[in-house]
Figure 1 (spheres, rainbow, N blue to C red):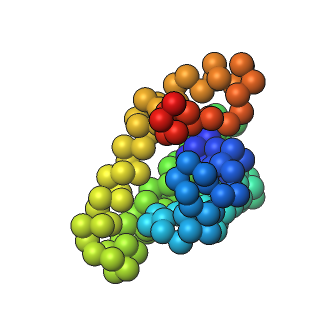
Figure 2 (figure 1 turned 60 degrees about the horizontal axis):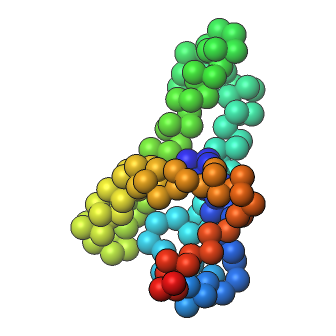
Figure 3 (figure 1 turned 60 degrees about the vertical axis):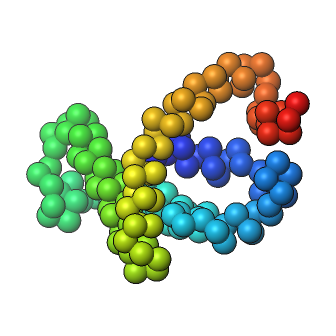
Length: 144
């Protein structure tokens, strides 16, 4: 979740999307899932979780305190998993009411399959970064 969302925060240009002929505002308005504002909330919860777990090793009575750094990291992983699953379930049910059940279920399936799709799309990205290509020129979308 963090690496994918960091990509959205830091590498997606916020100005006019020439390839798709869309402004940032338009793209934010049409997103079904998590637009930038919702992502900030979700990522803030993710970022605060380690501090909350440090000060409440049982995470407010939900977990058994872990022993040592391994126990802390295990519990942190559980908290992060719960945040991710909670965000998925919350937005899916929210879409049931905003749109319809089918839209919510399709969005949920899209989110669940995104990591596999991303691997297919971006496995060459580290090589492009080493060549100095910070942003995909999208030449395939221009018909070149």
